[in-house]
Amino acid sequence: MKDFFNEIKVNKELRKGILLAGIGLGIFLGFRYLLPLVIPFLIAFILAGILRPAVDGLIRLIHCSEMAASVLILILVAGAGWLVSYCLLNGIWRQMENLVTYLPFYREQFLAGLNVCCNYIDIGLHLKSGASLLYATETLTGIFSDFRTALLPKVTNGTVNILKQAGSAILLLFIMVYSMLCMLKNYPRLLKGGAAGKWLQKIWGRTARLLLLYIKAEGSIALIQAGICSLGLWILGNPYFLLLGGFIAIVDALPVLGSGMMLIPWGLLRLLTGDVKMGIGVLLLYLLCTVNRQLLEPRLLGRHLGMSTLLTLFLMYVGYKLFGILGFLLGPVGFILGREIYLTLVKSIPEHHGEEPG
Image (cartoon, rainbow, N blue to C red; front, side):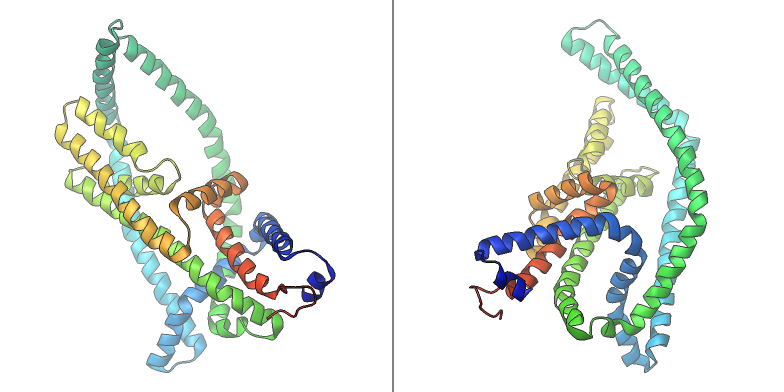
């Protein structure tokens, strides 16, 4: 790389621009074409890096081999993950069953609330009685009809595809777990060996720390928001606090949408239908979620990653446009990875023609 830049008589800024464009193109092509091929090994590598300190600690504690410590840590993590998942999914499943049972009742409640809201609109806009309700009913009927028409084929095809891919998923899971076990045992040695290993170690050291901080930050915010929503809905007496709390936290993590997409209309509808306690409670819950996110994001993301909320939003949007839903994660991750590669490689560009890099 030194000889290449020394042979090209361009100024330092242009060299950096070429390098930056090359890194951006490389990351885009890597995410687009290479990532689907190596994703089980990449996940295994990341998880191995996260779990390796626990393996080292266990080795020091019980003086066992690396393989034994790696197997034991994997068993403990898998067992804890299964237990937490079972408890949460069991609670959510029961709430979903209850929701389906009482769906006709909630439908009647919704229609009654819609009728009250439409009456206010008719009076406020001096419309004929029932005009707003008729328009809203026809609109909602059309939306649900279109949704059902578009959704059913996708659900059917998706179910068939899931069944077809079940064998592949099991194979991928086995490859990922086995790869993670091997990487856990040999993780320090994976980052060593030759110039490529030193270069990888230099970039991966800081990049891995920043990526881990980003994943931890977003995960922590999502978990805290889910906990706040679930606890708040439980206090308000909602029987589906786990189901709705988790769903609101997912919507809250999406750019632009946020928890207000659900909580504001819900709270206003409750106020208009006379359920003042629930309405005020839901709106206060929205306020709490908003304040909590505004306090946590700059603290967890901006301070450690050098990424403002606006920049994170922009990167998530660009990632979504390029890679779909997965782009919400790949956008910020690509930025962090590209920045660290750039900062590492730019040091190898000589200041002047013929100058050796430091």
